[in-house]
Image (cartoon, rainbow, N blue to C red; front, top):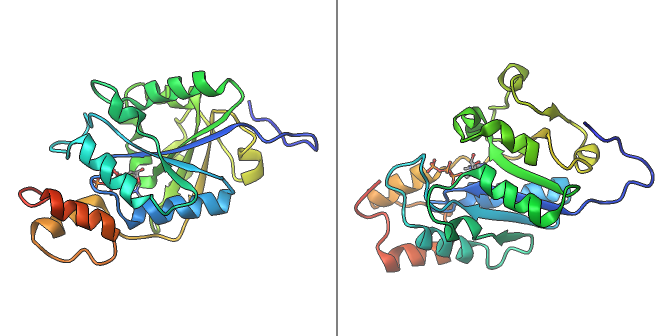
Amino acid sequence: MVTSVTDDAKPLNTYVVMGGTFDPVHAGHIKSARQLAEVMDYSCIHMMPCGDAYHKQGVTNAEHRLAMLSLALEQEARLAVDARETLRDGATFTVETLKQLRQELGANAHICWVIGTDTARSIRTWYHWQKVFELANVIVIDRGADALDMSETQDWPATAIKDKTIFKQQAKGCFIQLALEPVEVSSTEIRDALYKQESVGDHVPQPVMNYIEQHGLYRGKN
Ligand code: ATP
């Protein structure tokens, strides 16, 4: 059920998560999260690296991915690392994380899972994907001119909302699409460039590049 905004509507306890592999973290993640905090007026976006990425092959170990993300966010006022998925054994399932957050924050909290449009298009492959909407809202970020059209979300058990204020009053069961300024880069491109010993420009923060060099990451694989 969608709640309408009333004059006495109080801000809800809020927790916004951008989950990902972050192998490695790059400017697309960081700039999107910054813009999201800005346009939605969220005080914090929690960046959450997955532990065992069951859906991807040959992923760098969680300890390195977590260390790189922590370095990238050191100077970011509104972005924080949430390491909980890297501390769990076994495959990382978003619904399990959301169950835990819902228990911690209570039934009324505004909990959001942030995904790019590419991830949104594959959401049906997630373990118990429909339950995501029973536990949280979803924020879909356009990566360039690739917004989802209505036909792509018609089987989502969720209400589409356009108004940001109304969205922020919802505990769960809703989604909003946001067109942010695109940053055309992916971790795959970064890994490919590093493998070929090509420059990654300013797509990877310098402390993260230093870490990659120190630990010899992405040299022998792409
Ligand atoms: P890979 O290339 O290894 O698949 P990726 O660059 O897509 O990785 P992930 O860590 O898998 O990065 O992504 C985490 C989340 O960030 C996903 O929801 C993804 O859609 C989103 N994302 C990744 N890159 C960008 C970008 N350039 N702009 C906006 N969102 C992004």
